[in-house]
Image 1: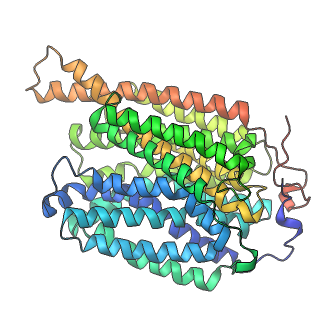
Image 2: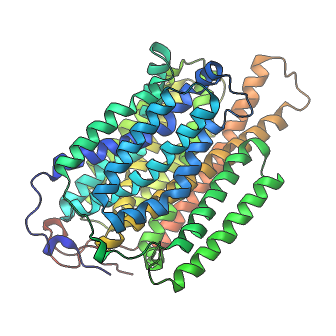
Image 3: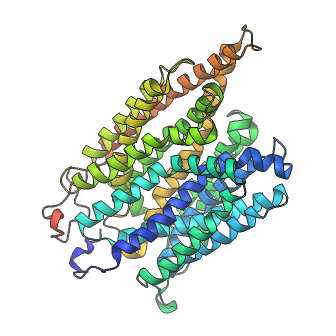
Length: 498
């Protein structure tokens, strides 16, 4: 286990807070892009003549490339320098976004979205790795990760607003074009503000190509399988084949990494109970959270009649709660209390929000039903994301930070894919079962059936949050070391106490 860097880097970079702004903007762009395109999808489908069966590829192409290549993207940052991969990721993301904005066919848009996902997979772990190596003092690290965690947890809701505004008042293409100036500005800032960490050819270790094949292939198969489950069902032969293939490839990945002299993912990173527990907790939390975004969006627009813009605004309280919780609570307590004293209560708050939503009805007012649940979930997620992301890279050697960052990013991506497919399938099945023997031509009956499905999905999400709380309580045992508030002590990184 590597010692904390506070003793080896006594003079902090005076530009570190401006560098944080650059890293935060890049992370926000990645998170926004996940939801902003969802709002634009109906308009893009009509404009480009995309069939109903193919429209899912606007989303799937991105998630496949992003989820499948995260491990490779993280390791490339370790081998070639995170500043370099961060800038390449930003410039490539801008180019892919421009290509998508100028798309004249569905295939061109699908290809652009896959490119976005590939460059996003290079960008996301580099951003988290840079954050970890830039802020080594425990107090400053807590503040920096509080901001980063707030963006990671709340940026999706902002994407709904941005997507609604751009689609409603400009054109769906601007949901892609908007990334270009943001990415280029962030790349310019990165060039000027981030420390050079280029690794010379003579000191580089070879890339673990067998690990790339097994690891990225396994993640790709699982993400694709869960994406197809939403439309095909979990018992479909293609879905089951992909999930089984993905599991076998990941088993092969572990076997390859055990004997590799230069592993893509050093196994001691995930064997550590704190990092493993943080990744599992975040992955399970995201299963519930992404499902929430999906069925709450449908509930607000199709049942309550909210416009896309108003739907985005309706998610703002959750974003505000995440920001307050991550920066105002978790960042201040992270150096004072055991990490699970933040993560476990956060997951229980999230479970409480889901429990509230199980009482949802067609006639439920937003202020009495959706708003309290959003606030509970937001407060909870701020307590989960911020310390988990910090723990994921805390105490990791600089040469392995990218791989560690890719691990928790992969947990988020796989969790999001599974959550979207799983909870949507559960909601759809419950809705269909409710409609049996009823007058489906009545809008009230259809709305009641849909809300029943959302409530059932909320029950499952409630159980997932409770499971995540048990995992975090059992596995995460990190405590801040004595002197952590002032950055004293070489072991302020990962001193775990059973």
